[in-house]
Length: 201
Image (tube, rainbow, N blue to C red; front, top):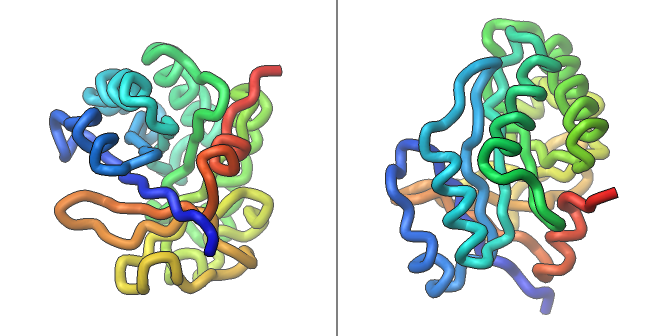
């Protein structure tokens, strides 16, 4: 039986997060919202980043995609927010939250996402996860993103058994519940998870 790691994800909606409490309850990894679009930074991000770090969780940061904007500007803004909060350390994770099309066609959304990911990979030294949901991916908004690990939101599926939309063949993280807090599972060990994260050159 493969090990399963428990995780959560948070944004400013949660306010103060009891990171030590979550760690004691068995949470091993977490993602906190860092930025949205080209200029918004989540006001709780710095506190969450430090809190995750101090509680020895595998730390993750995510960017809420606004595909209408400039992907390079948004990627720079995201990396800048992480730097301001203390920067990336070995094993830290990053993700692109891809769930709105801003009124654009699917291929435009997918092109935005590819450009954002390439910039983060090149300048941040880490390959992003893609957070999305079944219907959005099925609509073609994730074309060309198969090389990035899939973080699939599917609260209606049994935990650890989500549907996998194309272009992916497998899921990496499953968000299986979103009330009262977003809960996730990773199929594997802590070492396997941090392998997908940042590695200083």
